[in-house]
Length: 321
Image 1: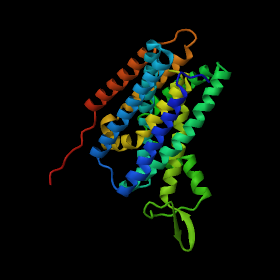
Image 2 (image 1 turned 135 degrees about the horizontal axis):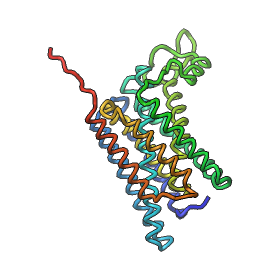
Image 3 (image 1 turned 120 degrees about the vertical axis):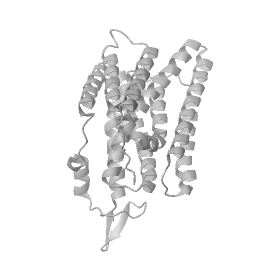
Image 4 (image 1 turned 60 degrees about the horizontal axis):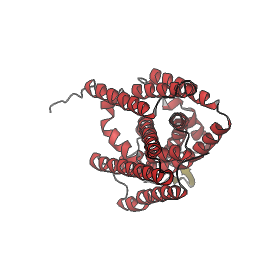
């Protein structure tokens, strides 16, 4: 798998991720279990977006410095930005499912942060493996691009069809399997994953939530990773844009949690984006849609969906006491 990124930039990327995880697990851990407010979530969301854009600027400079080709650097930086935006957009669907899982298990707001932090670690590891495997497959078998494209088309249609329906966790196969293989307590025990009841060591509902969040991310990664391969086959861009989108997932969750009802049509927009990307991938040998056009289409669909969502958001009636 070929990449334009110099070796030192791989090391720099790893260092940035490790520092980010250190901040999440060590520095923020000192805050203890607490409910993340909108202001805190907004501030951290802006921080992660700024870090991602700064890294893209570093990537642009590294490509230009190594190749001496400004046009190549512009193209690669644009591919990163488009991939990042697509992954960030598709992560919204993850967030709505996470919100449903937290609501179903009545997870106290103070404990949600730890679940998402652990979920981020698992997502980075699993997606890295899937990206490397996917990149190798595409290098060996070009026709897999058509398989990915068809899969994204079907996924987009399915997402549109299911957009207005409430997922049924009671009949979720993963949840049924988890309950079958391990006894689960009916109560939380702080942020612990295991507790002792009647002399037996059993799982707490928080462990079930972490497991479901991990399974959900793997399922959604099957959609999102092929989507970015439609933008670029450079493994560095695919991996870094994915990881930077994931690093901001926790803050974005708490931010969208507060305004979820205002963006009730967002899944329809994401469905259209998946169909567009699937079509782009299937047409790659006939006509290669420019990256700038792809970026414009994705931004336009998201902006239009969000505007229509806000204008048609259901009004919450206020009862005077």
